[in-house]
Amino acid sequence: MAHTDNSEITERHTNIIESHPHTRKLKVAFAYPKLYRGGAEARVMWGITAIKDDCDVSLITCGDVNLEKLNQFYGTSLKPTDFTVLRPRMLFLLWKYPRAAVLRASLYQKFCRRVAHKFDVLVSACNLCDFGVPAIHFIIDFSWNGQIRQSYDADLARTKCISPVDTLLHKGCSWVAGKLSKASGRNLFAGEDLIVANSRWTARQISDKYGIELGVIYPPVTSNFPIVPWEQREMGFVCIGRICRVKKIERMVDILARVRKRGHDIHLHLIGKIGEDSCGKSVSRLCRERSQWIIPEGQLVGKKKRELLAAHRFGIHGCRVEGFGISVAEMVKAGCITFVPKQGGAAEIVNHPLLTYEDTEDAVRKIDAVLRDYSLQNELRKHLAHESPRFSTERFQEELKKLVRAWLTRKGTIRR
Image 1: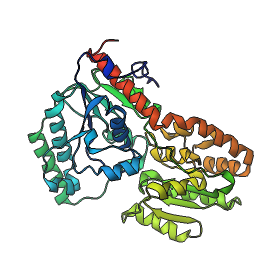
Image 2: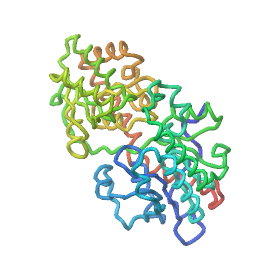
Image 3: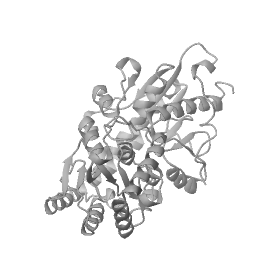
């Protein structure tokens, strides 16, 4: 059974630098393959924010770092002078061709190994990274372990049909990757590295498979949402996330359609880009067929997204294999009573039996009961308001500082 709190992570912390025996600043590197505007990148932005005054911070990544847009998306205020960006040299075409993922990853990790010796602390903010030396690794999902992923959801086993040419190119990229960059051979689960999960659920999956204990640090989620009185909020639901099979959009629509049949005049805002793939086309068809109560919003960010969430009473989530669920935490912080699957890390966010469902029938029954009871809604709102500080940016920053100090103590760089 994995620990929910690692003793090293939760030890008392004052200032990282005060305990360091040298006068120079600690050199800390955050590694993240490429910064998009999703959810996991928040660890990088708020991680750098947490230690930039005490440490000499670098970011190992590929592609551009649009700091203005990243700050806007994550609520940070980092400046270019707060950290140094280190990038591996890589042909532009490697980033354009999807089947070259294995080659990109290989070259990226080779670069990480080449610069690893320059730093006192190495932090992989995106799953495991083969630095060649012990490091801190944040687990954000199971994209690195298909066996764990597919054991929880059959949709994760589905792959796009690829042509014979693509198959050959993929094999070719894999062969080239093996020639250009050989793995260090280190076992990251042997105990030298510090692996941190994004939820207790994630920690249990890894503990069960590898027999190790993990600490847990919840991701940072901003809370600058407008304060809208409950009476002024719309009697509707919001749903945020990528429009793909694993998000179970069709099931959530089915759930709310059945709730409507029980006499509740509710609607649903889908926040996320609807693509042209089979899932996107299916969701688009659902939106057209139920246009009187489903509103596809597309991808919303910043003020528009915050205002839409805060204007509604309820949220719903469908993914059963979510390691955490940044979108769920956002809905909760916006004041939405949010319903999520019982399986997965999202259940830890709401942390209430009435807000977690086993299947479609269970979801319909629980949502119906909550919608009919105004006093119960108030109780659930208070409960969620009490839970949400666990995912604050302030708490994440403090936990990260403790983690860095614990790591230095473990390495013998500083004494307890």
